[in-house]
Image 1: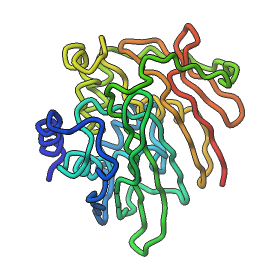
Image 2: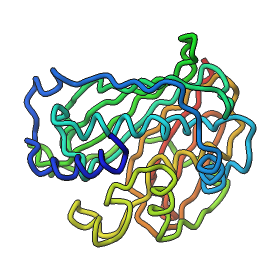
Image 3: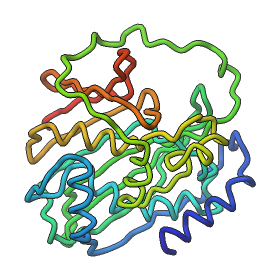
Length: 273
């Protein structure tokens, strides 16, 4: 199934998904595999420049997520996946690079759903993506959480993070244009309507389209010199409505993207295994 067909199929099935799902809703999810995947050079070039990488010799840390995205969409568009594809919000991710990835190297990709858990705003599904070399060596992996928003018993409770760290030193300020969601959607394949236009974002509770979490993370990581073996954990704490001004800040192994008023959009940490 092609990515556009998976997205269309998932959109058509979305109104028929039951929320919240039953505890046994993940009993029949599949594991999808695609061998010998190589980045398209033009797409990789466009991604690098859009996200601030320039022309690196290796594949940027977040990029294999895009290579596995069609498989993830096939899983989340399938009847067995319990959450509606339309309106899913990426809430957190862990990226681990075990070895550097060259654009010409073939990658064997595997994607599967590894969990389902309650969230104060709905239900989250956890999706794992792995990239192996042809000889079976694990080169890269990620674990993502996707939120389907629906009424919950504590949805109206005010949630505050009293342990939130002090703001990190600001290093750059970026102006994110109104068409950023459409531009990143074209290169990533993620054309979720919450990212594209005010009219398509509004039915899902957003007055304006919001930036892709993976774009904001990639933009932050493009500012850092990451080692070959590295792990990054990031939480998307608040949507970035487009257009927007965003402040990139970092100190030692911590980084964040925040609004000019100080509200954090993304917080992350870098760990060397």
